[in-house]
Length: 289
Image 1 (cartoon, one colour):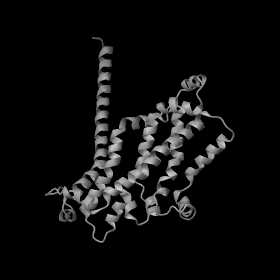
Image 2 (cartoon, helix red, strand yellow; image 1 turned 180 degrees about the horizontal axis):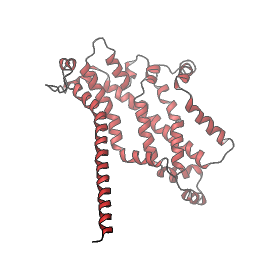
Image 3 (cartoon, one colour; image 1 turned 30 degrees about the vertical axis):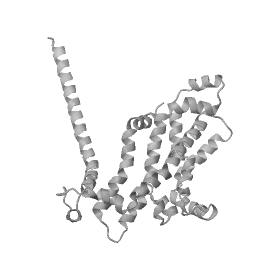
Image 4 (cartoon, rainbow, N blue to C red; image 1 turned 45 degrees about the horizontal axis):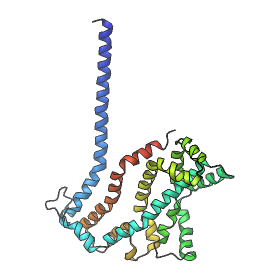
């Protein structure tokens, strides 16, 4: 064997050894990050299964597993009814709002009309306006003009018209789609709405699912909006308000409060696990051309 072949073999072995070491270090680092993220959730679940004395003593593992804490949450609070309220409040704005944002994004991506750039710039400028500035005028409008205070309408109706952030995300995704199929559909006599529904929207499913997951998570965890408009009527409470009611009671049973928090985490976790593949695809493809 020649000296050149021997030197090449040594270089390859060094490269392979360096790559293996790099992968090992990367996996160790990722495992440490995952542990830092998961430890609080594990502690939350363990504390929700403890008795009151062990919670106060801050014992890591419970000596007796109180699964009855979860049953007591549904028996002693309005958690179950609040779950139903929450889904009734957020499903229409999540589905309708995301669809309206996608339709608006298609218009900006494919149509030409007077003032298009001005309208788009004005919409994007709204992103820099803090929500706290809009909160008081919106409250006055819903309370005085529409008289929706004490009803779920202020929680449901505004989100059904979409959002600028979702529209911008969809716009970037639509720009990555080829236009040949749309041009063929126009030759066949389809109008723009039919083209969007039959040609473009099926190709936007990954982006649509990704935005549905993000919108669901944002509106499901929203605490301030229901607090402002639903008042103290427990029949209208969302999950977040029900948990806050447990927290603000005179005598707080910490283990049951933590059990309620674990229950409140389940819908978003289940939704993400079910849509994980499509969600990741929609996020990763949105910025590619």
